[in-house]
Image (tube, rainbow, N blue to C red; front, side):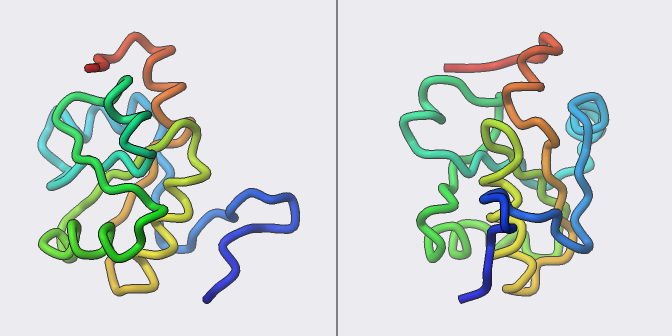
Length: 121
């Protein structure tokens, strides 16, 4: 398997993946830019708090992630986690599998909620 982590223990930025500020991600969501908004955290984290209308597809279940998102392979997908580390790993997995239109919420749900954007639980 490929090396998903840099020497500091964090995943590096993924070539061809857009890292969006919470403001830009919100604009994209409001305009229907993304066919799917995907929370790649654990089910426990998702059910505690998540972005409205997002789907759960944990990055730690790679096969499940790929299966769940296959229908969006040629569509724009926004990935998020708590910060951006797990969503960067998911972007790497998806890009390696041929997904092309990927974006990561830079700062994750943490930065999203700091801006006062909606959260569901």
